[in-house]
Image (tube, rainbow, N blue to C red; front, side, top):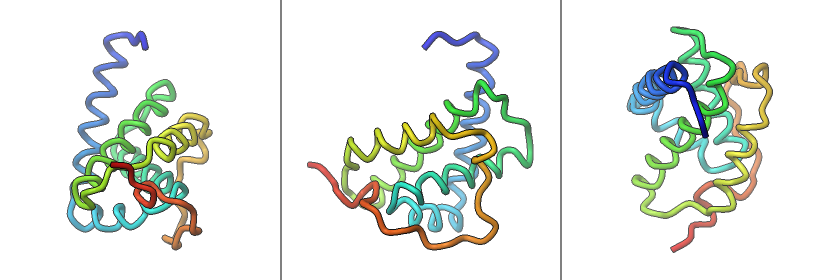
Length: 127
């Protein structure tokens, strides 16, 4: 993907901010629970996005790329903790969900609710 230097720099800064949110121990535990389903993973990404947006504005052209970066950071954490590789099909589906999400959909629910059971990110690990 061809990206201008300012957009790339902005994405890198926002990804660093996302890392700070994800790697906070109390949040990380909650995010790991969410990563068990596709909808939960999207909710976790949206929660991180909302935390970032409380501090700074996320430009619309950066939002989908940042969402995917957030998701991949969470996948790395989940993979390390669970010692399992995620299903490539689940990864593709969640990334597609994030890329097609409308900006207004990026708000987390008011109260955390248990996600509906679906095959999750790590439910179908591959070796």
